Length: 293
Ligand SMILES: [Zn+2]
View 1 (tube, rainbow, N blue to C red):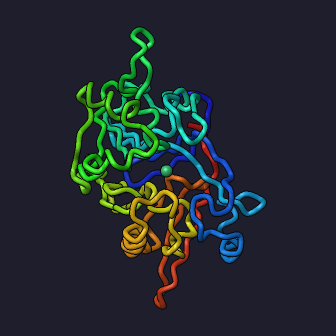
View 2: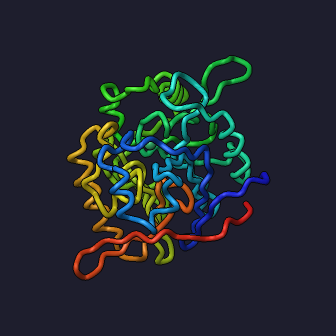
């Protein structure tokens, strides 16, 4: 384990650790055209940790490591260092990820790809120093992708990730097409959340009466929990479906209890949703001190 500090949460007997690749301020409207400076201002002050000083949205790219007993899982592998990507690569991320996992990359049993977009699958593969070819980064892991996502992948591979982030897994025999509601372990299950991509999944954790949900890209900012009509219109495969999915997930997790972990939320990254008796939804960032890993 290295010196880096990572946000970490305990959900029942499960530990979830955030390993950051990058946080950047993105131009107004570049992700969600409805996310205007005025809309952001309506949600101050609770939204302050998630926006830059000038009100631009802060977009985090990070992996989550889930540790359940002797099983280690990784959810999403960020941009990576191979191929042409629409965002800067994150060559440092793989070392940080290795340092953040007890036993290193070889200790990972399962990699969950919430969906096949370039900023979620980049470190699925690593360059073999001897052959120069791309091989699975986590040599002992099964990589899980929903069947629906794989079936529709050919027409949605806008960033050319197949050759660098998916095909080498197929060649190595470690890619598993699974049902969108697949049970991964005793405490971890996939949840079908289509819209942003055809077979998009979120990841639900349930242990000893505690619950958490890793969103994937059903939201890019927590404002979308209060305004599910705001879509990531430039990137959604089906924005109407994405709105329906957001409303369904909000109904499911707005209990004030479920820890909601945003795949693109900068620190504090987590929060709790609550719906008042008259139907008003609020999001409370889960603030905690950083602890050494
Ligand atoms: Zn994304």
